[in-house]
Image (cartoon, rainbow, N blue to C red; front, side, top):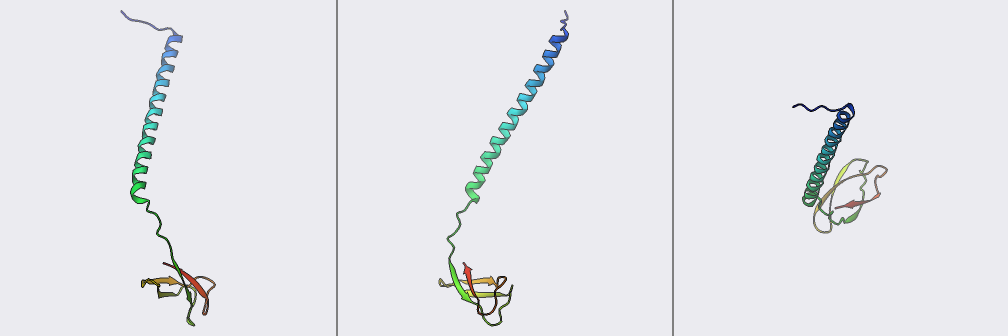
Amino acid sequence: MQQYMTQEQYAAALQQAALQQQLQQQLQQQQQQQLQQAQYAQYAQYYAQPAAPSQTTTVVLPADAFQGKTYQVQAPDGRLVSFQVPAGCGPGSSVQVSY
């Protein structure tokens, strides 16, 4: 035996089906966001390294210094540090070099 719906019942059934589909999509989006947040937290744990404390030393530029020229200086701890002469600096200028 077949059942028939009135126009109002049919419209209500369509509306309910659309709402259910919308709710299901929202649930999937929330689950995707939660997964992405969990993945981000997991990656951040491995890749977010605290910055090493930066030290500086002062260098007085030699007579042949010009913007962009690369020099090496030995830091107080013995490391060789490369740096480029910054814009606006030239012979005799004092430059702070981070290492």
